[in-house]
Amino acid sequence: MDLILAGLVVTLFFILVLPLFKLYGKNKFIHKCIDVLPGDKWYPLVGSSYSLLRTPVEDRWDAMSQKHSIFGPIYRSWYGPKPSVHIYKPEHIQKLLKSQTQIYKGKNYQAFTSWLGQGLMLGGGDYWRRHRKIIRPAFYAAILDSYMDIFIKHAENVVDVLDKHVGDDCVDIFPYLNQCALDIIAETAMGVKIDFLKNPSSEYPQAITNYALLAVKRMFHPIGQNEFLYGLTEDAKHMKMNLDIIQKFNKKIIADRKLLYQQNKADEFHDSDSKKNLTFLDLLLSYQESDNFTDEEIAEEVNTFMFGGQDTTSLTVTYTLLAIGNHPHVQKRLQEEIDSIYNGQERPVTSDDFSKMEYMERVIKETLRAYNFVPYISRSLVEDIEIEGLVIPKDVSVVVSLYDLHRDPDIYPEPEKFDPDRFLPEISAKRHPYAYIPFSAGPRNCIGQNFGMKNAKTVITYILRRYNVTCLEKPEDIKKSYEIVLKPQSGLKVRLERRH
Ligand code: HEM
Image (cartoon, rainbow, N blue to C red; front, top):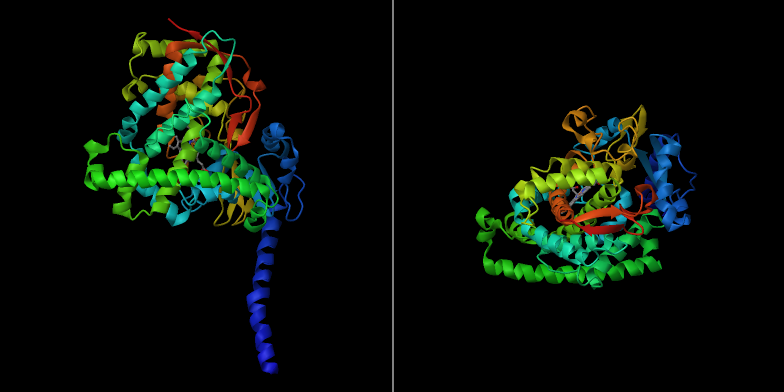
């Protein structure tokens, strides 16, 4: 009997106590490395990020964005019980982002997994590698060019709506640009004509917005990192309600499109001549046969494109208008470039036109620097890394502040000044290769960069061919809210005057 008891005690020791010792040892090492770094006061389990939740929503971004100026180039924070190290200097960023092994997203994105699953944005390791390889061709130039008709149609819709506001004292242009971007991404990604611009109260886009807001709130919540405890909150219920709406909508779209695809036979989709008018979803369906993509994987990727492609493009246009609406000389020069291509005609924009828009390219680049609206990216470390003699241990998330990088006065003198000529080729060439990375860099850079740029250039061209835009607020007075991307809290108020 004694022997059996002894055996039981030893077994229990190995099953229960040993892992706890191991966890303690690991945590001790993490603490040893992290506790030497500066950062906000923190409490066990609750962490430090909770303090942001006490800050009024409208002031939260201002509080977040000051941390590097308070704590320096490397500091730490705790999201609940999970530690993060924050960096922004190009040499430090390069070490992390160019790695082929540090390709796992930071744990703070967990809040988005019920929507995006293991799709390109959040997946990691070999799973992500396989998806990235399969999906890369969907972003080849020829495919993107086939979306030009869709970009044009929606750019025309948006100027038609704006026409009604010519002569008004002021119009908030942001909701229109947002609706236009959603219409474009829904049509290119899924082949769905939502017509959100004309029907802004539809349920699906609202559900996306609500879900994203709740997910960001969850990121900073002390129990947000604990699936079980968070599941008991009211917010979790609302998140689930919105997710159900999104998933029901997607399921139907995918099923309908799959039927259509099967009717049209797979070979046609592989034939490069017939790639015109294929949506991302069609391409994914064609990969389903060649690469064993499951329905679930397809749904995750469609959601990922909807997430990655909407706000980013509308914000590119919004912040460009904020910049040029405050800098008439930049606007004038941009219009001269546009006029030299179109001679006052409103003919459809073509992809070839973009190669003649050198100044436009610089203006957008400077916009993405000055109003860096994807302010942070993060990685969860799978092995220790060393930065400036400090060890950042495995399992810690490293948050890269692109926002602070792009406003570092050591790299960009007078960072508040809007100056597209910072991106003249000879000036750009002198900068560190990781000094300008609005689309991130390394193996996990943005796959939608060219899609976003072509889309934004089309909409900006349509707007500037028709109107002079005056912005009624100064960039420094625009309050922003952090929703993974930075949105202007009160939209963008402009005055439109018809040209010609
Ligand atoms: C136009 C402005 C855009 C900006 C500034 C931007 C920025 C970024 C950044 C910074 C990342 C890296 C995130 C990270 O490392 O954690 C990223 C990744 C990504 N973006 Fe974009 N993006 C833009 C447009 C788009 C568009 C239009 C799409 C889709 C159509 C898209 C889809 C994605 C996807 C799927 C990823 C994940 C790639 C991977 O990890 O393999 N993005 N984007």
